[in-house]
Each structure stands twice: as C-alpha cells, then as structure tokens.
Length: 319
Image 1 (cartoon, rainbow, N blue to C red):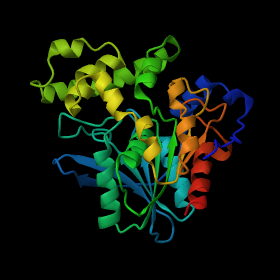
Image 2 (cartoon, one colour):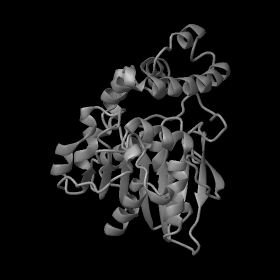
Image 3 (cartoon, rainbow, N blue to C red):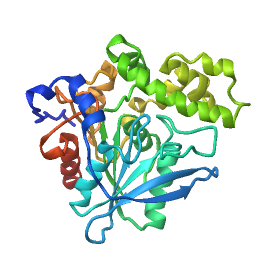
C-alpha cells in the first residue's frame, strides 16, 4: 500500500526524540486493574498474562506485547489495553518469560524472534478463552515478534484480524549497531544493567550453562546476545540471531492487515527499519513514519498516545 501521511503533531517540547522517549519511559503513568493468569508452555515453562476487560462481555481481544525488559504493567501496555476496554474489546498484556517479576523455569527466556510463545497465547485465547476476533499490537521487540509471526507462517488463525507494530527494529543488526552509538549510550547502559541483573540469577541457577568468565566478558548488548541470547536459544552467535530473527525479511509474506508506525527521529532504528519498499509492494502492509515521536514516545492529548489512537482506528477500518 502507499505510505501513509502521518497526522501526528506533538507539542513543540515533545518534538525532540530524546525528550519524548524518556518522558514516556520514566514519567508516564496509567492505572488499569488487571487479573493475572499463568499458562504452562509446551516445554514446561510458564508465562504470566495480565487481563483486563470491557464492561460488557466481548468476543474481541487485543493481545499486547512489550519491548526489551518490559512487562505487562508498562504504560505503553496498560494504556492501549484501557483504550480498547473502553471500546468494547478485552485485552491481555503478555509478560514474556521471566518478565513478570519471577524468573522463568528454563535457562532460555525470550528474544526478538521467539514467535512460539505468541502462538501459544493466541491458541489459548482462541481454544480456551473462546475469542473469535483478535488483534495484535506490539512495541519494539514485541512488534518484531508480531511481524515475524505473521510473515513466517503460511497461514495464521482466521481469528486474527489486524496487527499494529510500533517502534519496531525490523532489521535487528542495524538496530543493534545503533544502540552501540554514543547518542544511545544512556539507553544502552540501562538495558544492559537490567539484563545482567537477570542473567546473574540464571547463572546461579544454571552454572553449567554460563561461566564466570563468560559473564564477565559481557560489556555491551552485542556481547550479551553473543554470550546469552544466541547460546540459550539455539543460534550460532549474535549475528546469526539478528539475521534469522529480523522481521524485515518476512514482511512481503504478511497477509493480515498490518500497520507499522516508526517515528523518523527514533534513535534506536537504522535506515533499514523503515521498510518503504515492502509496504509499497504488499497490499496488506501499511507504513506510517511520523517526523516526531522518538522510541515509543508518540505523546498526545489526555494521556492517550497517537499510536494507541491509530491502533483503534486501524482495527475499526479492518474489521
């Protein structure tokens, strides 16, 4: 489809990508009452799902996936859940393995291409919960998971009607290289610190899988993906992981109406993360590139972000 002209016009002080990114990550607050459910996965591990509901019983559900080191209580998760609840749709905020406040059971956890866990949640929503109309929305890492899920399979369940991917690093190698640049040093170090804290817990539980020397060798996010992500999830190294899990290669095969919203001043994204060619050649793929918004920071009025309003609009247009 043709590229969508974005109508996003933030206040002047949120036009700066750094300001909008930091405000959205550290300042924004959204209250939502949720009910937690734990599901058992096929390998014996678990994931925790945080549910919220519309006032009236609904057969519609939006499944929300968070970004790196996020969880189901992050404002970028609870805000769209609340908005969709107010518009007749139930919501489930998925906590990836190990992200719900309790370490998961396995040495593996989650990664940018781990679509099997999303598949498990979708099957649970359809076969156990009985939802017949499902929408997917992801932020950053979670957005890449959604796009890869939709594009790597010949068929997806008929219940999946639309998808929205926001701030998506669909070319993982480029995004990884961007995070190593000086402009992203604060973000990089914050992510790495949190990841190492959780990896230390895993090292104590699984000392046979990661040595002290390997742990001490991790100085960057790239090192982390080399030492842990690749090893724990069956990839040769970080580069192999980035190549196989980037959703960019799967975009031509998406058959579900899908909207990608990537701000042009998102410092996490490389040039390849703006898939203009793929959008022009796939009638089900829509690409919107607002000039402003940073990473997951499309701030708008009344604490409802632009990407959340667009998600609701897009779902209504395609169902």
